[in-house]
Length: 287
Ligand code: ARG
Image (cartoon, rainbow, N blue to C red; front, side):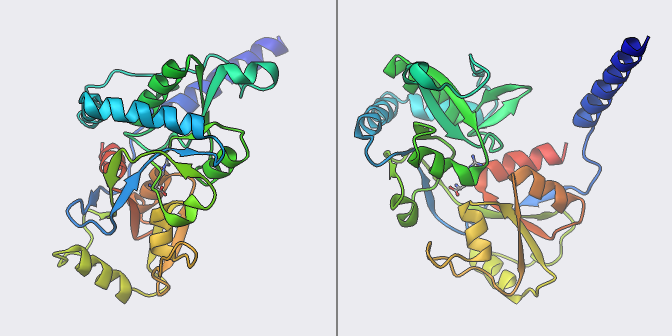
């Protein structure tokens, strides 16, 4: 009898969990200032300094994909939603021991559509597709190691993962810890606000956005994902060469989507995020 009750309870809990996941966000709609690019950034994959072999294989793959037009096709298909690539790890935890060498372990943070994200419980996105091609080229099985974004570089440095494929921006400071492959995408940070926002209503350029951010006080709260260039742009980071906006408050989030959710619910005033993920996450939030 007890068993039946706990089974029933478990069922109810699962149903409740699934229905909250499926329910729409009840907060305000948000909008992205897609035209006003606050930074200019380039993405590449991160490998350990000593791992020239893997770097060269990845560079060769990227060169091929660029030359035959495949890279553009992959990127476009994830932008317009026609891509049908998904991946599920073949083992339930990070391969170790004698088996480790048979795997290409890819470090990412899979909350960054369309570069890496979940479709149900399957992994998808531009970087994940390229990861699968890289594993194929190397004759290895792909293992996608989903972690906090701010752990990606360290895990590559320590060899817990072979390569970081995470919509990662190349910069001098990161180059001190890891090597980067050739660049495969150009991006920018952009600002997201609630649709009824009035603070930035008169902005006509990226400079206007920056000037408006500079005018805000400590009660103005900007959200960004921890460890990202967007976070550094807002909060400042001396080592990385970001002055930041010390006049306002920057709040760090585990994912960009959580920041946008808080924005929609009125808990923060703006979010700074990479452009294409901003567009995707905003559109998911507005559904
Ligand atoms: N391009 C930004 C950076 O390198 C953000 C990357 C976030 N990526 C992710 N998979 N969550 O800092």
